[in-house]
Length: 481
Image (cartoon, rainbow, N blue to C red; front, side, top):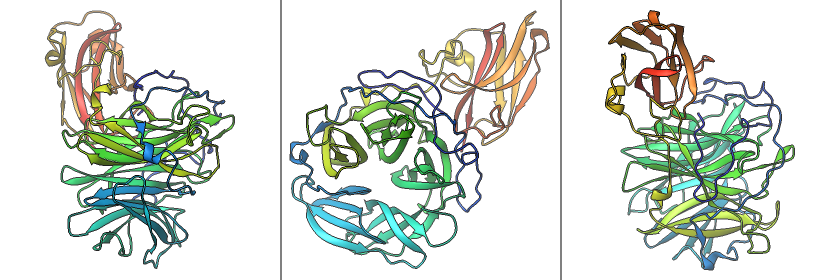
């Protein structure tokens, strides 16, 4: 589902529905046709957006002077930086089944080229998009990456590999998520979370491979994954800064809370096709372990015209904490589309979470998402208002179907009534029943699906009884993955 957008400084206008370049046939919902196959894109409007006008905001990250010239002035492709005392570890795409490795003491102005790392392989042709992590102080590491299988669905799948010598050598990757016939996972990012793992990746439409949305998965062991939020983020509406594509997600777990952060690249449409002109980096936040996300605005954007080496494009975020109170964001940038790219860095005080507005819930008595609140499961708990109907459900939480029970405290009288399911952004997901107020059913079944028959994403949904447009009872239902 798509949530409200809140920008840290200058708000952006909301326009029409997201647009995709691939055809309707290519982007129909697909099930797990291959092992681990995710649910496909929900739809692809045929008409592309018009050109997007660039608007500069006031993002929280500020460039680090030592990186102002881009110390690696090469086309670096996918890359990732991770840190472990006493230094920083950088991997970037190289040729074939290899990554290029760089080491640095401060992660800024002195990077030492340690050459290519060859990956053992028997079942794939190439690798891209590393996501390395230190697993301890003994030199052990694990890494998620894209691999290009030599057979089966393609072109990319997600795999995991391990190292015992600080990333100098790696084991042969084990595939953990495959592509389907129409889509493939790209640019994986994994974070350890509450004894398990969360993964985000771009879900690309295979025929065109020009646009994507972002999916989030969960795992207990890092090897077996199930969808958690599909999609977690979609492309923006026509005219928005990310109307062309959202991709290259990077997950970050807040060490002081259960919140998850997702940094990602966003590209606009420029005429009929997506372009990397004025690509920016955005931020999304989840307060429920990655089941639902709200977009919180742009955190890094190109330098304004005439300023800097990165005035056309910034993207592909990766993050480290150089200090407890500082968050550093590495990014790829260029001063003209398609030109040589360099590696830059920007920093922001941590935390800057108080600047983030995230509408988690809607008030059952007022479906306007601008009036966001945090109700309990019953309307009486949420508002203290005595309504004529009390609604409950069993089971709740649920991973699918549930029975909704409606108890009337008094006669409803005349009027038109309806029972609907509403998501946290205020959108009606499904109408369960309509009729006269005097014939409200005592029980209704909800199968956990929306009006079009598709399974709803994990999150909270409001079962609401309204009579002549007024709320008569409401109840929150939690859908599990």
